[in-house]
Image 1 (tube, rainbow, N blue to C red):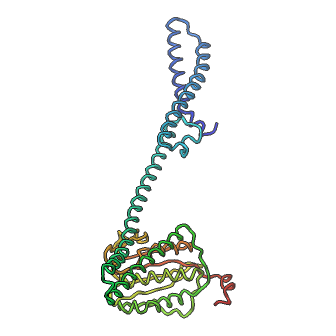
Image 2 (cartoon, rainbow, N blue to C red):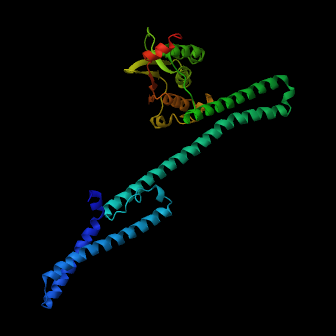
Image 3 (cartoon, rainbow, N blue to C red):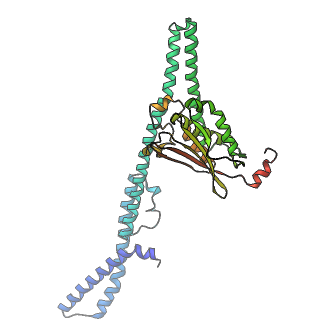
Length: 358
């Protein structure tokens, strides 16, 4: 008999043994009182009583447990997913208690997860509403002012239309980012992987952001001179978006006359890690776990005045993970922040295929 089967019948076996012993002792005492003690009667009774007791107990207890357990799961509409009734019903109370305890624990975890998701959903809808409402009301306000008569003034008309246009541009920017992150989340974004020089790409982003960083008096620089190219294998356009987002954030939230430093280091044999480090104000520890959530902002007021869709870091995270890579963030208040991500080095076969392009 397998160990699981023996365990499932343990309660019935012990109970049958106790019933048999008690009954045989009582029978022996009764026979002694009437001077009719007979070993044959005692032995035959024992051999008959034990299997009968065992069978009756096991059948009754199985039906009793099964009926009530089934009713419990029917009531909570969980019967079809339960592992408790997927096999033979056990009469071992310890095993049954463990199974029900595990079921209850799983359901508590499931309920907690649903609560977290519900909070996240409410937070997300509130943020989306706010992000869309601001430019919509801006555009609406300028258009209504023009319709109320300001359209006759040429200077006012031009200024208000330009401001309304900026509001529309912001709406388009948010919608495009929402569309992109939706594609990333459902895996509907095809990556065009190719070998390219990550150092060259970072330098190109430096050049693109030169005026923006000069306005804030922030220096964008490498941690050292990179004399040799570092060839990685990834979607060049998407990785440029990742680097740009990190650098724009470092400029946006960095201190005036600050520095943002980028380094590219060998991580393991076929990986490099790109680090973007600034000496800005830093990020409070309680915000770090939620930085990559959609529309999550550390500074609810100041960050909106800086512009952006609020989806940048969420998009960055999905791009990096779509490459099968990791993204990291470290920050200390008053010291600065470091965002980093890994990339796969280009292999010889990648270089061979792309040799005409390089």
